[in-house]
Length: 110
Image 1 (cartoon, rainbow, N blue to C red):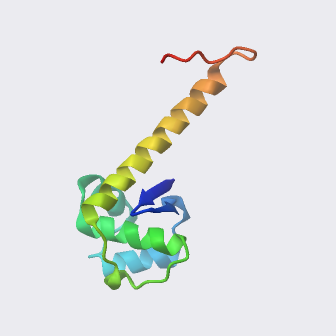
Image 2 (image 1 turned 180 degrees about the horizontal axis):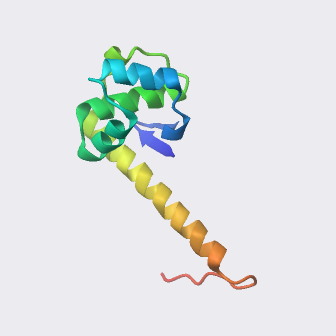
């Protein structure tokens, strides 16, 4: 998914987490597992948001120690939610387009 945060677009995919990254998150953020990370993100857990922010930076080539990560947590949480919603919408539209009979066109409802 593409997360737009503080004027920059970041690519992020939790499925791309490596074992080493998962281990760093587990050790650094109070034994947080991948399931804890996902549920903590939904709950607004600051450790989960910090781990996701660090992972996002890492996936985009930014080298920073997890303990040195500082960011606007509410703004980032909102950016993640917006990116997630946009991804869900795109998937729903793609599924709808696949189900449409060949030769038919989508009708705008605006």
